[in-house]
Length: 292
Image (cartoon, rainbow, N blue to C red; front, top):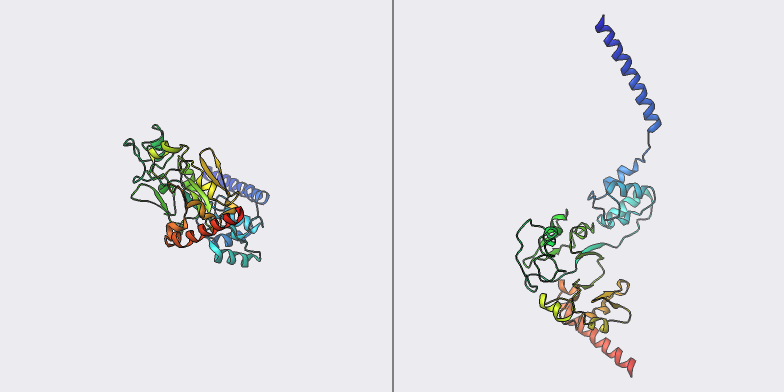
């Protein structure tokens, strides 16, 4: 008799709980547009956050909801954006691709090392000890926090101890920006070629004493640049990113340490002589005509 009572009790309890769950499911159910999962399947699945949202599902929700355009995903590319746009019947839109730029050229071949760091292999750990072992306390320590943080294998460490970004693999997620304790990585549009590769606040000889390619704050680049392209803040030149076209590369020509670079010439060295010299002649003639 006791066994029968227990079975009946459990049956009644199970039925009651099932009824409660059924009511709760009806009351608490939140409908989700089935197109969200379909759009998410079309996305690259990187979950990198480069779009400004925490992952691909959140991006899919935003696109389906009409808050963002498919082209705002910098990783998927044009074909992905057009596929999603065609599926939803919306405009694909576009987003200028961002990549990580290292604002330090002071590798072990040109920068002084005042001590040898022994300890946990991390820039963040080394920074806690007098700013690191490097002579320039503003420079890259070369212990690869950025490389470790990059989940897309877009960063590798070069022989001179500086990280090198593979722009074909870089998604613009910004993880390296967060990982670097010296704040030497910044996200720039790929079209931006004029870069100041130094963040040292030292001036003149003290800057050169610790790094051969440091910006010395001499202001020559600002003087050579087209009007209003650049100005000085503390000891470093600051560039108006809206005005960086090929003609602005003249700002790099007389830099005594090459701290300011037109980075395209690092990939295509032939540009430096042929293009830059013609720009310099053009600017000189323009200046002579203006003062005549």
